[in-house]
Image (cartoon, rainbow, N blue to C red; front, side):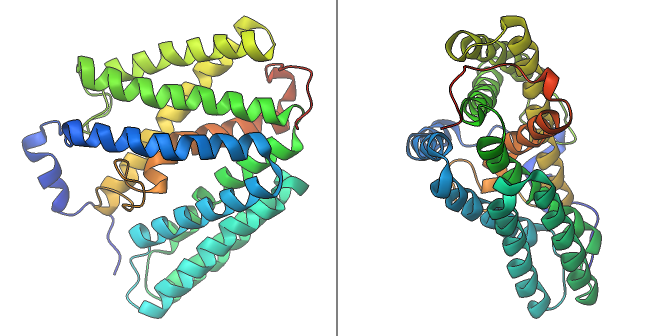
Length: 297
């Protein structure tokens, strides 16, 4: 059965159009604890690269692909849904393992998964378009993540800089939005994100870019512009994922990350920013800010 609108459960999330700011202190505590556990692990694999990075990213991509399938497949048969879980997870993991050999192979893996998953969904009377898009959405970012680290000049420093900018954006948007409130950024997509949070995120992302320029080398203005652009893309990715959740009638894509929901909930901004950075690095390398002279490690 296909459904192209959010369910009535969304009305309960935001009754009478009022903003919902749930969770309070407990949500903040869970978020902080999750960050304390997961952030060092993410930094370690990004810094180390190699097999550890590939395995960790492949596992994360597989979980994200399963979350999308759970949310968007809308198939009537259990067999079709189980097959979609397998195909989607395998597509994302395969793209990650191929990434060090070239971003073109990542794109080919995503397109192959797109075709196969769409066919399975169609035969199972599910949403072929949702699964076709989902195969790309849950594959490209993770392949691009590894490709940036392993196959671009100074990939280690470049990837660490992207993480710093995006994480600063996420943290600043969350706390500035909760602390200062203000008009909603996109009421139809998210009842919690505010213009205040978006502006705070841009300011802090700019500061992160300045810190990268000072610590890793490169022109200050170049890094400032790049960090602001990544912040905008990351916030756009966050809003896009919020729109998907409203479209499919879910609050979180899963509960695997305490305080955050699922992998897609936690990494939405980073996924968008990583794809944008990879496209720039591949097709417009001259506008990528310079980093230190050290190799990619």
